[in-house]
Length: 108
Image (tube, rainbow, N blue to C red):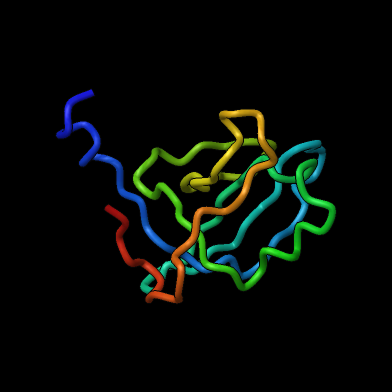
């Protein structure tokens, strides 16, 4: 992949304000995320990986924010949670800054 392709991905820090179920979904959770100057709804397939999904409320995490919105189970997702481990068959973990930064801060 060309470096210029990597530069197209907009990864930003957001605070997960609320985690809720998506009706009829076995894996999806709805995340209400604060990016500082705006808020978004982002769906993430974390439901089966976490005993208590609300434990991530109030945490900062990394999100891809320049994807086209996508409707899943009747809810529009406006980005993607950037997690660690899923692609390698591990229980996914949040990718987050080592200390708090302003919401909306760019990664990279």
